[in-house]
Image (cartoon, rainbow, N blue to C red; front, side, top):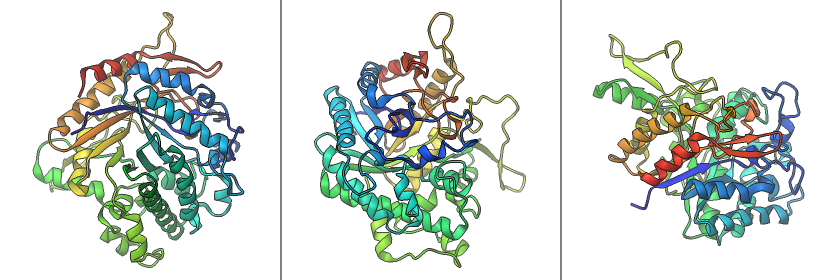
Length: 442
């Protein structure tokens, strides 16, 4: 096995800023302008200003000692509304990738991390059957430009959040609340975007390594009972009616197994999108890795009838400074194990991190022992499962504090503190914790 990958991850919209420089308007630029959409009323027009300060951020990565940096491309900086290349945007990403390579850091590029161009949404977004061709066109441009520097690509990040939060609940851009028929149509088009992108990456960069980065909240059995394990595994991939846009199998089964789950055709038999063998062949183009974003999970036991029962978190249970982030380290054991059992591909944890209420202390430092503890606990579990299945890498989310989508600038996941008044960066204690872990090796 290759040397274990220790990395950090970011997303273009969350860190770049420069919202009106060499860039088209995105759906998130629009979404943040609507009063009430963002918890603290902030936006990402400046964010971490990484568009202008990326060299400083690369120095932080180099000093941290990571071997890889996962960042995303803003589609809005690559193709304008007339279908023309944005030269300056393409140069920005090629310069970023080149400088990473020069500093011994492998670029891992995500093609879509939620910032769809507004002009694409105006044509219907994921409800427009032409979107996969538009995405293929964009993919062709950027992969040709990055070919000298990048071989690792992730097509789409967290389709669950794209669809459930952005198209079911309206909490994320584009702020839609689709009915089931339209939702299934949108999911199918998203998967076609993925599949067509895979083919183009392979054609443009023959030695490329490709993946897809969903997220999940694993079911963690509280004991070693084989029946409990079996039921947790089954529930992890179960397709349920209302929650289906937020689940694993509706996206990963077509990609890795070549078709939607059987329950998909039963649950939605009257409202299915048009699905043919050609579509499924496109979607299931072979990819190299299972990427997965895992932050938390839930504990399960068997009740007196041997039925699965979720344990409630007790009052005061350890959690991050965001309502969904309970500390469940074993999620990084069982999640990868379940995924490998089903899909049989090497696994890379593409995001894992802790949101904390960080402040600069009187001594001028940021002390965040909760984050350091979180990283250690989760990596213990990942190392344990790596003795059973192929685990190739881990990306901490995030290098920098950044614009945390509908939570705005209030929520901090970074190893590096960002003072949004002046963009100053300050390494937190957890930065040095992760640095030491990297030095010790996996």
